[in-house]
Length: 351
Image 1 (cartoon, helix red, strand yellow):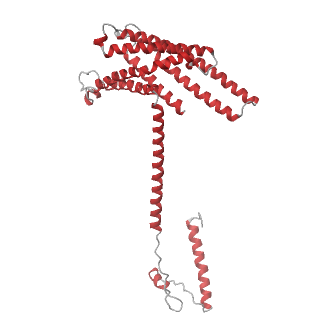
Image 2: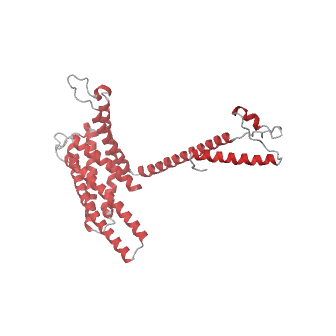
């Protein structure tokens, strides 16, 4: 009957009942044993159904037990178990994938420094957020004064300073890579524009001078009693940051030139496809590689932009006693650079 309306279903049922009655009447006339239809009240329907035309009772068929409910429960439990196993296996694969990526990412001292850098500036930001605000007359104080431990902000700020010193130790690994780049030109390799090669040399030389000066300043801060008469840590740090400014400017200019060269490469790929030099699949792969390099270079330009003002601030002679910029601006830019750096690093490996 499908989607038949209820009243139509009842009408069909009544018609079937009338036709069955006529057939039963004809069966009685032919002396055929068949059940009778009684017009008795509903209370007697059960008794009439168990009687035949000749008065003999008809034994109803025995009820057979069914395990459909139990079977459905077993099916549900089985499906639930399968779903749990699927979720568990998916979770295990994701954990294994993350651990493999983490081991690969953290194997480099440069990326280790990037992670510590983000922690360093995050601790500074957290110390600012946790710092109690100035008391307001007539009020109990702000949220921090009422609910946070007053020692929390100084503790976070101390962690920020301690991580800064840890990062100075990691810079011991930077000098050999700078010397290698000076000798082999690796910081400008793979590009056609000769200006990129020259800027790579500038970057390598600036870092080769930056790292030793940073080590001198680090020594002055860690053992001031022994080195005070020989080393002015703030002065040597300012000199090192001037080489850092040189590196940032060269890196920024190099990134812009690389973007221009990548634009030419993309146009060359389009021409090769039109002339049939390469197939569409190979062209698509090359366009994907170019797009990824362009995004990485734009992220690098953003990092250089975040770096520039803090580097200039720290390169001035009185950066520690009379800074050009307030701490909130300098460290806020450094936090933005640290977040961008982590995203760039992860995208370079997985994007």
